[in-house]
Image 1 (cartoon, rainbow, N blue to C red):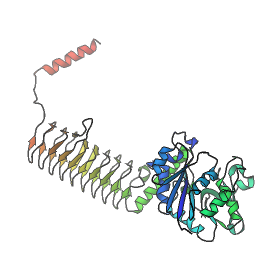
Image 2: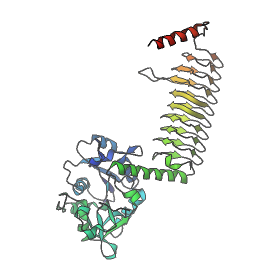
Image 3: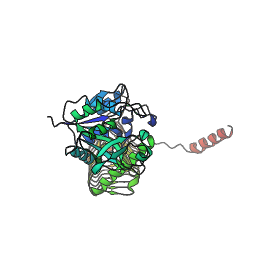
Image 4: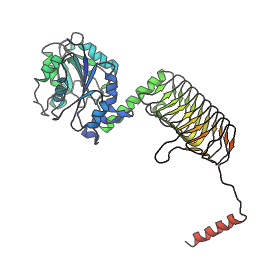
Length: 442
């Protein structure tokens, strides 16, 4: 018999309570579609992933690619969706997961699998939430073995008092799942095929175990409010991991991290910092308050912000300095170089120990194509310099403040690219008086 383990993820729900054109599985959590998190976790545990989607969910199919998808054309309940997914399998084991449980950890998923591989014919996940609410209840019997699950709408008052709630996920051999799923019927308040009905069938054939997890990772997401709660839980998890890796987070609750953020030891992040996908912060760098980073690498000892924005493709090398109201896009800033304030550098490469003055801009886009600006080592770019790409400023060169640079600047040269100033005696006062008079006349 094959030892292959497959995750069957049920993701066909539209999530009407979300009030969105997007399927529930595509709602954003930690900068990513909700289902991304579950797939990333499942990849650590299983050999194969099959996602059950609804008709017309092309965006979802693209998101989960290259993993397989199968369409549930008729939404007849979770049991029906699970059957469609399991029918894709030949043998081995299957873990049935729900797309709206994105915070499930690899450790808990592995515990679920391990429980099945013991003496149990079926293992499932349960939790004891602070408020049990409308969760299905897990009914246990002798020695704590699971006998059945009763959905809240079908539960008696005594059953609703049970604190152990169904979290939805299950694990069993494919052959058993196919057998049980073919035997369930829609005889319930919803007139649907409940996946939970297989538990009673399994309990008649062998032992059914319940692996308990925390509400923090097992609670489902069905509304915008619950999505916000999940975001808070995810961020707490990411912040705690950063702290354990040796980072200093000043006011952690105000710092937003991405699941793929890499933070080395002795990194300091000040309050109100947003970090999007693809960010690596190397040892000893400082991210000052109100900065926004995505798709960038900040190397050892660099300082970013406050109020800085680093966009994708940016690398800030060792001991470089980005100050307030500076934006870098696809820019390589050399060792020890400084861009202290009010500057935009796009599609640029700056050498080591150069200084970019306030208000300087690389004009990298002509409306059709992007062009590069190259600035060498030990350069001084005067304030309000406009560098019209493609252009190169060689080592040890300078530009005068207020210059428009359209041609290459040789090494060691000083470039003036501004109009000659002319002072016209008395004309300023006369112009102001004329303007005031015009204003008074309306």
